[in-house]
Structure formats: structure tokens, C-alpha cells
Length: 391
Image (cartoon, rainbow, N blue to C red; front, side, top):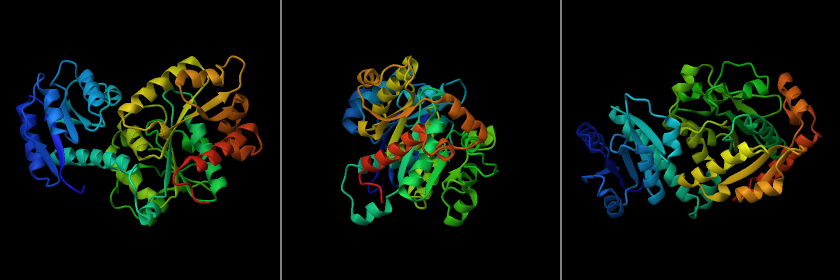
């Protein structure tokens, strides 16, 4: 950070106030704004101070989700971090859906709060820098293209799209492509590719901040299609131990070694998923031509505005299209008010056979209509990115 970032704490809890003061007193680049905040003056204080980060104690208001949503909607320049009670059952998905960029449980270790705040500020600066001019040397260092494949509705085919798209990009661009299984719980990328390995993302998480090319090559698995794969954790306990700040550091290191990264983020929207999306150049939003899928996609598009994602960052991928009972493509575009970027035809029997064999569709039959659709999407992605992908 080029200058000190400002943080506003919204809390009535004296213990949280003191713990926060103590934490930021040790951080020269983080400035806690000493303001007494209550429900009546909250808006005025935010307007006056224009903080970079707003820490919101969930016990501050009887309706904390509404409070977070209101702050995010009214003050998009400021990032919200939720402070959650250690006891009590808070729906973490709802915290993210309300617009919080991160959350932390109280009581918290001092270094944990500082790391979380700094990570969020880094993500904000990255998004803001996309619109600013950068030097030719900086462009060269940041040529990695990251695509996160996500579907708000389960079963829409995010893993099928991610695996086949990664291989299609490798075949089209003739460059290294890394496929990350971002479904930390119940990821299926290794199954789709018939990979048997004990290596996983957690092997890199354990060394976040100290990764080098040798260690990355030891963990990442080479598939016979030519792509590199980083499988999901091997156990639920390992998956639950992954924290956004460490994940962000790992992604930064991987960018230095792979020119193209595809992430299967599944359908669970949480802190780690948002971290993947923040780091991405494009979010490929997978939907099926049915009303349930369209409803979920429309809700995600609304949420994405609270995350400060520009519209052009999101690309719609219509999967399993062409059946008689499907909603027509023109109607989907009219309802969602977005153009479909790529369309993948339906052939459920063939897709299921490929899954059971552990052979990707584009490898099994390169001339199949589904394979051709993935190749078209890969070529269109090459054209869509600014600066363009290297040839």
C-alpha cells in the first residue's frame, strides 16, 4: 500500500474496540479512525471519513445482514469485513451474499485481523488498478489470465465446463494451462480426469508465501492431455482449514508460473470462492436453459454488483442446450439482460460415458459438437481479453 489505509470500526463492544485499537497500533500502514459510532450517526460518520475498510460487529444491530447490505449498497468504495460472534450459528453464506468481503470471528488473534484487512485492501487495489494505465513491464509481469467457472445452481456442469475448457485453451494457445479444483469440499476434477494422486491444494497452502517453482512442480499433476492440475483437498478437515488470505497468496505465486489458470469454483458462494473471483480476469457463469438455473444466475448477477465486479467481467455459458423443453436462448438473454457468450449442446449419454471413463469430452471425441463448442469458447476468450492472450 502506497499510503496508510483507513479503517472504521462499527461496534459498541468495549472489548472489540480495545482489541482493534491494540492490533492497529502495531501496524504503520493501517489507520484506525477513532469515531464513536451509533445507529443514528453511522451514515454521517461514513460520509465524513470515507474509510477504505469498515469493520461491522454483527452484535451492533439486531438485523446485521440488512446493515451490511445497506452499507455495501450505499458506500461501494468501502469494503466491509464482518466481525462474527464466536458463539452462535451465523450463516456464513448469507454474510458473503450480503456483500461482506471477508469475516472474522471474535475473539481473534491480533495478527489474524491485520492479515484479513490487508488482504481485502490488496483485492480492492487490484480491482481498481485494472482501469488505470500500467507500464509495459507491468503488463508483461501480469500476463496470466485467470478464469473462474462458477454456477449458482448445483448440477449445472461447472466441473465439465472447467475441465474441457482448460484442455481446449491448452490446445488453442499451445501454452501451459493450470486447472485448479476450487471446490474444496467434494471436488471432482481428479475424478473427471481419472487422476490418482495424494497431492492437493493444501500442500501449497501449507507453504503459502514461500512457494517456488520446484515446490509447485512437485505438487501440481501433469495430465496426459497436456494441462497441469491442482486437485482439491483429500479430506474435509483439510478443506475447512483453507483461509482466504493464504489462498490469495498461493494464487499470486501460481500466476508467476502459469500463463493461464482455470478454476472450477463449483456452486458454493463463500469467502474462498470470492477470493478466486477477485483474482480472475473473467467469471464464466454456467447456467442451464431452465427457470431454476436462470433465477439463481439472476440473483448472482445482482450480488456481483455489490462485489464491485464490472459487467464485462461476467460471461454467460449456456450448458446442455438444444432440448425441446428448454427455454429459448433469446428468452434467456432477454430475462437476464445479458448476451450468452458460449453455448454447449446437450448430449447427456455421451457426457456421462466420458465421466464414467475418466476421459474428458474434448479428448474422447475431438469432433463431437460439444468439443467444437468448447474450442469456440476458447477462441472467443482469446479475443475477449484485454490485453489479448499471447499467440
